[in-house]
Amino acid sequence: MIHALREVFKAASASEPTRAKSTKTSDASAERSRDIDFENKLFKAADKLRNNMDAAEYKHVVLGLIFLKYISDAFEERHAALEKEPHADPEDRDEYLADNIFWVPPAARWSYLQSSARQTTIGKLIDDAMVAIERDNPRLKGVLPKRYNRPALDKHTLGELIDLIGSIGLGGRENRSRDILGRVYEYFLGQFASAEGKRGGQFYTPRPVVQTLVEMLAPYRGRVYDPCCGSGGMFVQSETFIEDHGGRREDISVYGQESNPTTWKLAKMNLAIRGIDADLGGQHADTFHEDLHKDLKADYVLANPPFNSSDWGGDRSHLIQTNCSFSNITLVSLNFANPAQFN
Image (tube, rainbow, N blue to C red):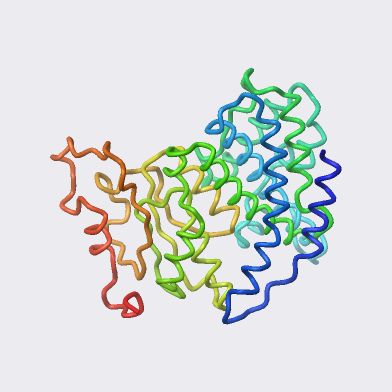
């Protein structure tokens, strides 16, 4: 199974053209559509390894490993480039911070973990790797999953999953590999949300809905805010929109908030794997009861509020702010000096 999927990944990488700046989205959309087949095959292969594990739990196992593969690929690429630069020090962590790349200690690098994938201690090695990454990268503190060593997770299956994810992007340049990893992460989020049914809607908004909202607002530049950001899909699509239309992703700033602690962690990883520098606050928090961006004046507010949630804390009336609806939060957060948001 692993060998067959390697051929799929090679074909996907080889056929992926460099995205050109354009005023139309058709070329980029067609490019992403061509890759759905290999993403689907990868998910089906990973799902076969799930055995009897609940989808809600399994997603953290898989997405955590995809994230680990991404930051390791990014680190190794930068490390190799620094080795070729005169007077550069590949062991200087500031060299990586300057490029928004996480420092990955030796025992947490994918090459080391994959070489140990068949060992019975692989669960502990991954947990230790996650701890080490959080220690060396304060932005990730408390974000990464660390339950790979639990007895309920079969270590032979875990080793197979590592080999499977390790195959992503083979045959292409590293930047292609990392772009593929970002799309795989997003695709897996959607598939796991579908498997979880109603619960999945808490962390994932279907891509066509997100795409429609973003294209209606066309956030080319300024501050973009989502008061109930889920796993961060609105932000990913906003930056994709900008790139598809020849803009610069540096022209927008991203702000968000999420009340569910697990979903907040998924968002942090999702945005990091896409290279999006976002301010989601220092912790998860309910926008109604603890607004982390009180002074923000956003140019665009994008949101898919949890309309069907009955447990929103109305009984805590003495704690609720006057802006106790998402429509009110949107109004007070907007920068009315910017006419672009009303186009």
